[in-house]
Image (tube, rainbow, N blue to C red; front, side):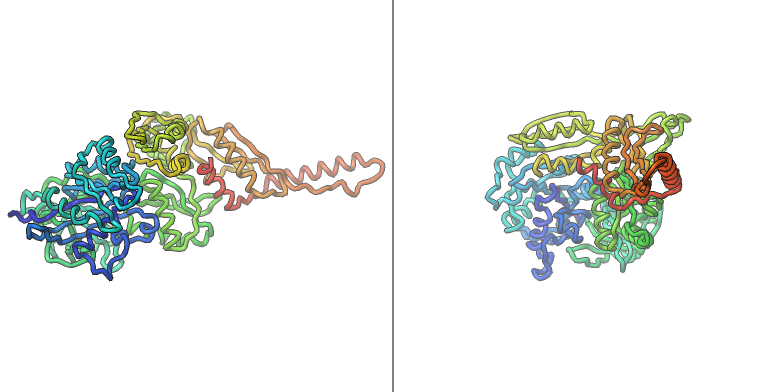
Length: 602
C-alpha cells in the first residue's frame, strides 16, 4: 500500500446559503474533530461577517480521521471554499489541491448560478464528484426534481446522489462512505524532491504569516529552507502542522497531505496563492501550472467622513492588507473630500466586506466614491496604459481608443421573471448568448460590460426577481467602447470626487440626475450657484441654486424713486457677482452620499 492510499482530499462546492458550512460541521462532529463543548455553528467560518451573512470568505481546511467499515482509518482533508465569484481564483487553487469534490445542492432551491461556475471548475480539474442533496428533511424539499435539474443543467449522473441534512445529521455516514469509496487517493510521483502548492495564507499576530500548503511530492520538515518559485525568496520553516480544526504541530508533512507551515514572514504579499514551494537545497525546475497573481477589477476611493481620521484609515488599511493580499491601496487627495485612499478590490462583494470590516473592526465612518473598473487606454501618440481613476483620464482629442472589460454572465431564474431580467440586461448593453430551460427555471447566458454591473445590477436583479434569481460571472475580454468622462462642476469648479467614466448613451440622463440631486442637497448661499454636468468643454445638464436676496427697496418712497431703486439694485448685483467670484461653496457630506446612491436608486 502506498503512503497516500489512506488519504482523501476533497473540496466542498456549493452556492451561498446551500448549507455547506453546516454540513462540514456535522462531518467534523462525526469524525470527532472537536469535543461537543468546543463545537459552534459554522465552525469553519471564523469571521463574524461570514457568520452573519452566511457566506464563506476565506478558504478553510480541516483534517479528520475516519474509521471506515473495512477497519482502516482514513485521513480526510476537507477544503471549505468560498462560493462567491469575487474569490473564484482562491476557489480554483483550492480545487487544484484536491482530487474530488462534494457538490452540495439545496433540495428546496435547486441549481444556482455560482454552483454552476464552481462545479465546472471542479470538472476541469478532473475531479470525481459526489452529489449531495442537502436540507432533505424540509417539507419543501423536492429531491427528484432537483436530481433531474442537475442532470439537465450540469450533466452529472445523479442516480447515486445522497440525501442529507446538515441540521439533523441525516446522510452524514453515507457521505463519509462515498468519500472513501468513490474519491481517488492522491498520486505522488517522487519522494526525493519537494513540490508543494501554496493554497492560502493569512496573518497571525503571534506567528506572522501562516501558509496553507498541499504537498504533491516529497516531504516538508521543521528547519528546512524552502524556496518560493514565483519570486525566488528563501525562508526557514519554524513550524509544521495540521488543522483538526485546532492547529496541531507535526514533525513533517508528506505526499498527499495538507497542512500549514510558519516561516516568520511578516507580509502576506510575499506569499502568493497558487505559488509552488520547493526546497532550496534540492529544488525542482518546473513550477506547478496555473499560477497567476490576483488582479483587482473594481476600484473606488475611500475617504473618512471626519478628516482627522485619515491617520487611523491609513493604519487600518495597513492592518487589513496583512490578512488580504488582494487588497491594494494608494493615497489620494480630493479638493472636495480631502485626503483618502484609492483602493482596488476583486469585486463588489470584496469591496463591501472590506468597508464593513473597516467600519466594524476599526470604528471608521467612510465615504466610498462610485466604484469603477480598469480600462485599457491608448493615446493618439501610441502610448498605452491602464486607467482606473476618472480624474486621470486625458482630454478626448488625446484618446485613440478606450477598451472596457466585458464579462460572461450566467443567470438562473424562475421563468415568470425572465422578461424583466432580459429587459434589465438589454438596458445594461448586454448581448444574449444562450437561453435554455430546466423545468420552470430558465438559464440565461449574457455578455455584459463590467462597468454596468458594478453599479447596481445585482441589487436590481434581486428586487425584480423577488430574490429568486442567481447571478455569476467571469471576466471575458476587453472590447472597444464609446466611453467618456462625465465631469461635475459646482460654481464653475470641477468636483473630482463625483466625476465618472460612463458610456456616452447614458451620460445625459446620469448628468441630469446628478445635477437635480445636488440642487436638492446643497444649501442656498448668498449668491447664485450653477451646477453643471459636462463632457469635455460641453455642458450637457444644468441646475441653478438661487441665492438669498435682501430686499434693498423697502425704505424708498416718494418722487424720483425709480433712479434710486435702479442704483441700489445695480450695487446689489455687483456685490453678488463679486461674492460669487470669491465665495466658496461648501458641499455637505450628505450631498456626496446622495449622489453616490443615485446609481442604486435608478
